[in-house]
Length: 346
Image (cartoon, rainbow, N blue to C red; front, side, top):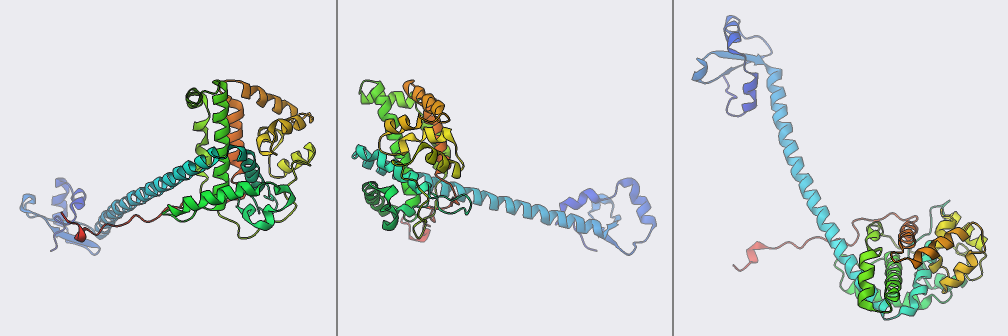
């Protein structure tokens, strides 16, 4: 006889009830049955149950063990994911700090940074799913095109920032695609903060407090998650980006429509179209479709919170900044250094 009681406790639930023991003793074991000997507390009765019940119980025990093991794998995977997210978040915070200081020291370059980001985006072709915010504007043959006139200084500033960023990166160099869009984010934030300071009569401390209390800083969550764009390895095709300073409103509308946006988004992105936002909005106001949105955002900028303008601008930039991109959510993460405990001096 073989006893299972010590190795598979779950089989106890399959033991026949006392009322069936007597009946069981009247019949000899049959094919397909397994007889097991249990302890003296069962009066040394031979108890029989089907082999498939044993196999089912054994399978259940193995299954429970696999579930327990798989849950431990899930815990490890979740822990690894949390580590990666923390690494990416820390790296992104460092990038923002470097870009903030670079832009703070060169405030006049903000319009160029915004146009640089927009022009890198606007090479996107919806039909072929090519182009877009892929950093291709860094190539000399692309940034020297007529539509990118005057943007080389902004690109040079970002190149210098990139050197500093990469020198302290554990997860590899930042892509130009990410760098350009994060620079646009920093530039937008700087204009939002500057507006709050102006509303406080130029008082930096009060302006910063106003922006913290009423500003849009908390609206950037989705934008920050779109971090891990890949760089193009060659310039994007010519003729995809208008010369904004020479384009008609209809041409601007057509371009925005071609990438999936309308008059509302064109109006809210006015700061990205050319160096003079007021002049751009004056031009856009000549179009009856765009005019209501221009007026809406002008009124919003006069309020304390500027909610409509700032929130809609962030939403639009977030959508534009990932057109055609497959975001690598593991980018910039790196293996955690293992500690050799044998070398520790305790």
